[in-house]
Image 1: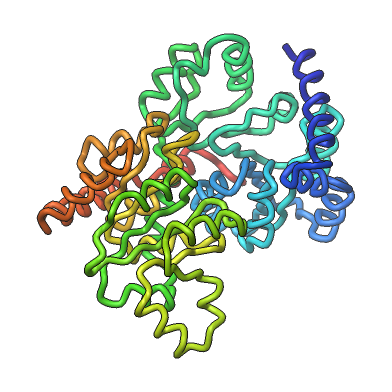
Image 2 (image 1 turned 45 degrees about the vertical axis):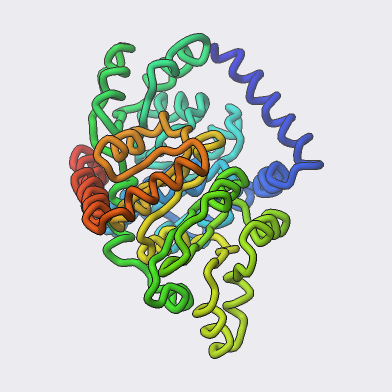
Amino acid sequence: MAFFYQIFIQLFDFSLHIASLFNRKAGLWVKGRKNIFRDIEKAVNSSPIPHSSSLAWFHCSSLGEFEQARPLIEKVKIQNPKSKILITFFSPSGYDICKNFDGADFIFYLPMDTKNNVSRFIDIVNPSLVFFVKYEFWYNYLSELYKRKIPIYLVSANFRQEQFTGIYGRYLRKVLGFFSRIYVQNESSEKILNGQHIQNVIVSGDLRYDKVVQTALNPKKISLVEHFKSNCRIFIAGSTWNNDEGIIADCQLPTTGWKLIIVPHEINEEHIRKIESLFKGSLRYSYISKEPVSTALDKLQEAKVLIIDNIGMLSNLYQYADIAYIGGGFGSGIHNILEAVAFGVPVIFGPNHHKFPEANEIIEQGGGFSISDANDLKKAMDLLLSDEKILKMASMTCRNFVGQRKGATEKILSGIEIK
């Protein structure tokens, strides 16, 4: 298996370099790793790690995994102020947004998982312990860390039975054996791993709950959105794609006393223009934020639809929502529903949600609704708005749902010694 993996990694690296010639994301991936070891050595040498200190390395695939791990990263730093924090990313989208995060001492792209790269990287950074967040099981990194007896922890992991079939199932069983401990989100994952004879498993819960609770308790105020909301209620459509926006446009949402905020997943010019064509008279946040204050406030008072055409605002926007639609459910899968739920906002989403335990559970408890078309969306809205008590009950259900599931950070750190 190891032999074939080395061939796969070489082919994967080659294919990314070819793709970088015509694919922007692949180009960023390759460019970000150019002279990577020179940059790592320079950073580490300019901020040497004292012998009395340790280095905790967190690997995150992308932005979502970083946000998930953030409460854990921050808690490690608080409890161990002398420790150094290293964060690596596989994805350019994660690295570009988080590269200036001040809670870490070092932030790098993860060098490609070849044997030479792995040995060189670990020699330079010399981690005391390592956290892999949710997934990304790089064989050479994990096997080398295991050989060097460096503790490796997998956190906020979630598994399905079908993952353990075929060649990938054999690979997964092998790499999971390298972890010192595996912290899973739920008992179902623990049962699946135990059935695969993997016993070093602890049910800790999902770190995302700690993160969203943290945000809900201390949200950043957004003054322009407050003026847009005024005395109206807000329907937020977050992380939307074309299919989501089409359904929202086809469903005649209530207009009296309600306004709509759309936060698309992709914010390229073509996509924003498509949204503007669907929602006539809509305002772009980037445009209105550059207007003179008096002009901007007048326009916001009159407008019914606001398009957020930048990245990083969504989690705080939910504080203004009364009902939220979460995008992605007509594609590969829904985006994060917990950011809205933590604010007590009932959520509506498309049919592709079955790989997300929190979505299935919130539906069962009455705080979430799955739809298949614009007619379903209208039915869900009509139900929530048919009686003020129903909307309040759904809101309370959402708050309780998150509150009952927080605490993964403490459970994980209670069983880990950081010197």
